[in-house]
Amino acid sequence: MKIIFSSTIGRSGLGGQAWATLQYLLGLRALGHEVYYLEDCGDTSYVWDWEKAEWNYGLDYPAAYVHACLAPFGFGEHWIYRTNESSRGLALERFLEICHDADLLVMRAVPLWAWRKEYDLPRRRAFIDVDPGFTQIAIANGDQGIADGIARCERRFTVGQRIGAADCLIPQDGGPWLKTLPPIFIPEWPMAQSPATHFTSVMRWQGFREASHGGKTFGQRDQEFPKFIKLPKLTAQKFRIALMGTKPEDLTRHGWEVAPGEIVSITPAAYREFIQQSHGEFGVPKHGYVETRSGWFSDRSVCYLASGRPVMIEDTGLADWLPVGEGLLTFHDLESARAAVEKINSNYERQRSAARALAEKHFATSRVLPDFLTKAMN
Image 1 (cartoon, rainbow, N blue to C red):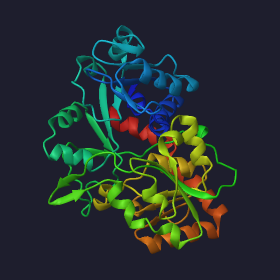
Image 2 (cartoon, helix red, strand yellow):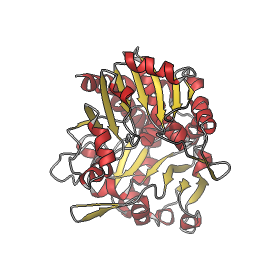
Image 3 (cartoon, rainbow, N blue to C red):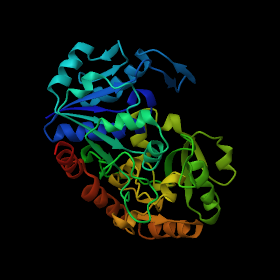
């Protein structure tokens, strides 16, 4: 098939977002498909320049980042970064030809731009919701831009594995919602071998505003992480957070080591190196993911698992669909978090092997993407 995959590599300018997209591009190509990357900015491109700490309103800066991320993997001629009238990478005329011939257009971002007639040309459209709960609440609360864009996609997927469960608080507006998992292209994420000392994570303190639905308010990590702020004082284990969105001293005074998240994640290579040089991941989801019992699991955590780095993460209802206890441990309070650290460290090599096995069995692109494509095209 000929597949167009749309996401936000250039607008984020961060290696983690690039990898979340690369997993799909590499995995779909490995399955034998012809794959193109699309990034549509609507009327105007505006992105944050991490190095200069200022907004950039041109196309050259973000397009150069897209090219730098994709070219090493053989996609140097298979991408377009566009606005209404201009583009970088593929020429608009060539991209329109691809749209005419495409079998599937996949959107891994809420399509906020005005719907373009060329996006109706591929045989099918699929949307992947990577912000479960917040996407559906926006629709339920009347965000017509999000609702209309998603409605143009014949198939809508979510990584919220528990949507529809009796105790899951996510509304089902915008559906029906099919389930999919964050995939990982295993050949690019080998088992890491070097010893490491720190549990780590890459974390944005507050990315978006909180959302309210059904009389409840669902927030970001700034509302969830403080529950575990004292953990470094309860164990000899070292922790390092690659942090964006708040002052480092908010964490360092409680014993956390802090690295600048925008530097750790500035390129796909830097992001992968940070993860593979970690002892494991300590993950705290957004408050909304926990409170809704969403069943959310991060594409970042999957990278840790594939690298043979065990993951300990606050529970979002994971045990309903994913084995926990070996390679992946969940916690819900300070004491269970401390216990998870001790269990991982008590037999680290066993936990490493179990982590890798989880990635291979549940998240490998060779397993996730054929099911995704079958559902998307039928």
